[in-house]
Length: 301
Image (cartoon, rainbow, N blue to C red; front, top):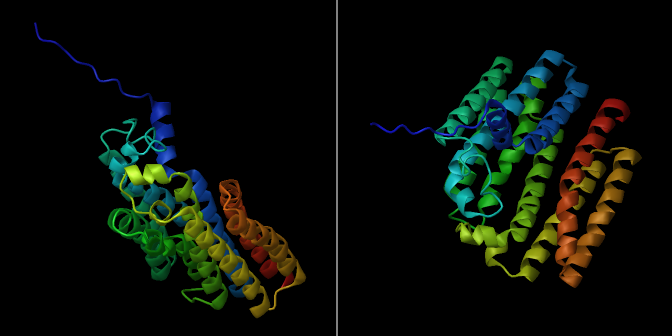
């Protein structure tokens, strides 16, 4: 008598949750917000076109979700090795076969690029470049080959800013957009290297040569402090150069002072606890800067 074998497949809700998980909605929310803020600030200069703002917002959301899902496929072997990531849907086979994650990701990226193209070609280009840099240049090519991998991948985080701006500014790129793009690029290595430090054993097991894996704690903490100093100093420079109000400057100085103090303590005491505190406030700091820039350009400047 022939034996039959049944495959236990996850239910619809579990599968849905798995695809949402590989989309990384927290990261989507942060990058969407930077792009949305950029489009609002551009609108204060070029006039509001809510159709374009909604289209570029949807384009950013879909493309970032797709990029994250594609990365989940690319990183599947590494994720299987690392304790922190073993339970993610692809290595845990909640999404199986793994190519389904890739198909899902590519479809979302294509939809994002198409929506960008409806606005203008430059918007579509920046949306595509964000995917190309994040999924291909960073995760596929440099992540396991260079300790400077995140330097190559940092521009991807700033692409939503440029996409949001050119969508409203009819293809023009102005200085405020460049400033916001650079803020994200400076923020990215500090954020990623902070995370890598706390999971360096995982990265070491997976053969990923992040700087915190190959450098001593003292060198890593000094580097993180320097990047945080640069981030705050550049945020202040933007306010001074652009002649922004006391609301922007006061907010940046208050938030920056906390980061300055923690960074000094980090280097002086070589404290892992302080390093974690700096990591936890890095994303809120970026969100605060973009929020106060929106307030500045829409209601003050």
